[in-house]
Image (cartoon, rainbow, N blue to C red; front, side):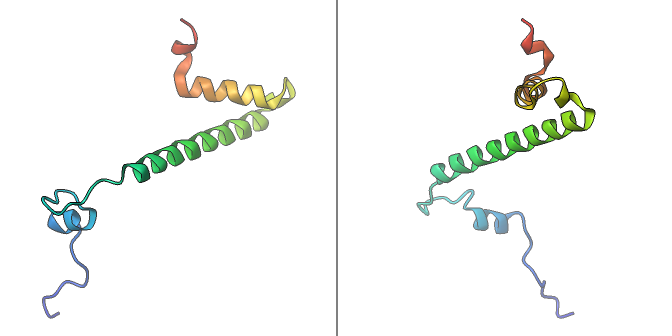
Length: 89
């Protein structure tokens, strides 16, 4: 080995340079619109995944035969997200 790293180390000043964190006087700003859109997309995909998992679980248990699958799935997702303590107050 020649003593040169094949890839730069991630962390410390390399991480600061890559993300712009801690940049003083360079005029870089946080792209808040991108941050907000990314957060909304993340929450949306999480909710879609939760609803899909709840619907699949209800179908596997045969609970969809007891009633319409959509309201049952919404109820399971709501109880999973907020818990039983928030539903009964």
